[in-house]
Length: 443
Ligand SMILES: Cc1ncc(COP(=O)(O)O)c(C=O)c1O
Image (cartoon, rainbow, N blue to C red; front, side):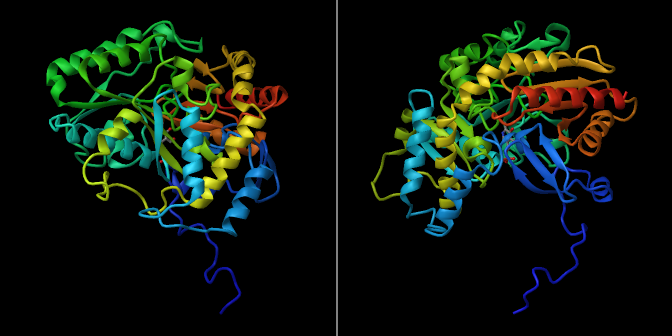
């Protein structure tokens, strides 16, 4: 056998980079080689501050020793156990730990490998739930404009981002969308949840009146819409959505792929808002981004609806080869320990006002149209360059990386910040100062 690690030259052509302009990237690649705590190191040895917890996932920071050790130990003990018909103890332990963190009543966990799979799993559970209860006419799914629910066909169907939808055909039939909760005129430069907008939940009543409740299975929303620029829910909005779902027997799903595990100062955003959905999707922060994992936390009453029929018959014909993968479970158990030992969710809550004040100080810089901050997440809207939508923020991201040694995330012309929950106050200051310089540079 050859001892070389690669039989072909390591050029940049073969890899089709996701959600990235490949030609621009390959002309000036941003390549990371190592990471530790709040920093990455680039292939050319530059230390880069992580302003985005990877992709909203490395909540405990990078390469934390207890998580690394747990993954190494697990890889040397049980590398894989079949996901169907067999399992392993860590999967059960992890499900119990997640259920204990979730709102009361959400006490069963279905595992998968990503946020997208978690969303499709939740939508399928919703449809099957109604079917099993003799309400098979409930097939309609309702999402929201500006929602992001991953890239599966279910997720893009209920999602509300035009570029993620327009090239992919008819998608799922029978999907409606609530209006986005964002309105700049009413909400600009808001810290936390805006006062205006709870009434937008009432649109659900309109959709139900159009189609009849007997056709509606579930509503899915992100409690805080992260991917389209950090849109916190208006005060009272989620409560109103819950009440309307209850009135019509519709399941409410919170997509907490970004908000779970501390981003908003709680294990789940449902806790912050005092609203208990019927299902919660999670991924990312469950194991601080170390091994692909996602899942759905389900209410006991939903689970119980499936536990009928002969005891040796499969109740839900759904699952993934890598559901509850041993490495992902070991990483998650170590991560949950770390969150608890370092009290990182409370830390995020305590830092929220510091972070909010710091980011709001960017108000008044050239082209800054709005700033939103909630938990340890911020969205900064920049005015678009005429005829070049997204161009200004993209330039800001490039400048941040090359000139300021910092990673920011951009979506359209919005810069998003979502640092690991271990960020220090000094590092928040560093980040905001760098973003300020970058905003001036792209003016
Ligand atoms: C709310 C939400 N749902 C689903 C997803 C999809 O997750 P993944 O990229 O792991 O499939 C994301 C990713 O950012 C997300 O923010």
